[in-house]
Length: 578
Image (cartoon, rainbow, N blue to C red; front, side):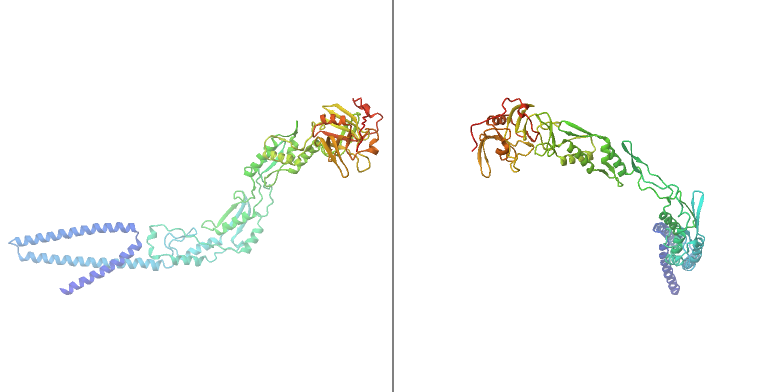
């Protein structure tokens, strides 16, 4: 009896150990959710079993109670119940041993499949680079790939026209190290999970360099393809700006059919390297595969559109220059010649050309420093050179302002500035108030508002090459009463002093006994214009600071005094110069 009990205990321990192993394998094979469902079922089963045991024990107690309480029960019935219990225990023992053996057998079968059958096979659901390798031996799967690689061909066409056919042998195509890669993939698979992948899908496996080719053969093949050497019928052209009429317009891009060799070569290379099942015979249609050289710039290019708009805003604007009271309108052709758009769509304004235009205005309106035609009191016209009187346009300022206005692209009128001004109008900058001095005939006239108010004979500088009164048109610098004129060897007080050319000016000369005629030749001044005292006073009163003083040489006049309204032609004084 004790020996039987010991055997029962050993059997229970073996059964327990086997159950642990099986449970560990089941945990590896079965997901956590499934395991949770199984454990839940086991708990329910265990609870039901416990309830059955409790019910059985209760029944036994009831039977025992009944047995004791029943007085007429026989020994035969007791022996029968004992025998029945013994048989039940034996049956349960046999069932337990059978289940343990069954689990062991199943484990042996499961792991036998994992490590014997799948030893050199891919697990179910294995896909490598698109190739179905489920339950295949490595060699079998590799042969499928190798067969496709060796059957590779690529057709290049233009629509329905076949241009080239590239075979695998043309480029030395081969599987490279694919067999070793596949063996490595197979070895790394967890074989004991084979059952799992009959229920779950594996992630596809991608390897690099499954297909290799001979680079030299590949390049030679590509270089000689008809598709690579086609003469285009239309060449792609970028969108551009065109000036027609009075504005810039955008000319749309042109899409041609010139092959982009780099694009086509890369496309062929991709087709070779991405070999997949049922894809070992592929096609490239150059007409639909973006193999043509495309325009770099389209009509919607932002810089192109902005350049067109900016240039046209300038061309559609009107520009003018206001010179005092006159407006110089700039014609559209001139403005167009100033504007250009470069290859990078920068709108350029030619400042040099604008400067040239400003120079024409400068030449037209600047009188300072230029020879001028002067109508004398005699009625003829003489040319007067030199002098500091005249109007001078500020060309630098005008150019800057005009360039800025054009670049701004808005209609505007630029006001010209002058660095030197004159008394008169644009047409006659001398005005109507000025002094006229005939150096040849020693005669002077003072004009006020266009009328002669003073006419007198004068004595000018001695014509010795050092003291000559220079010709020219000068600006009266200032007026001063009771001034003292100083030189290297003289100091002379005068009542009326009116300088117009440095130290040269008009003043009274009471030391001169007579004026006019040829007196200046021997008794001329140091360069100043000597005047009779009363005439000097009158001229001083009529003279205006900044008015022009015109000094010129004229043909000898027979009667200089006849060309004025004054009745006095020669003035004499009793006072001699000191």
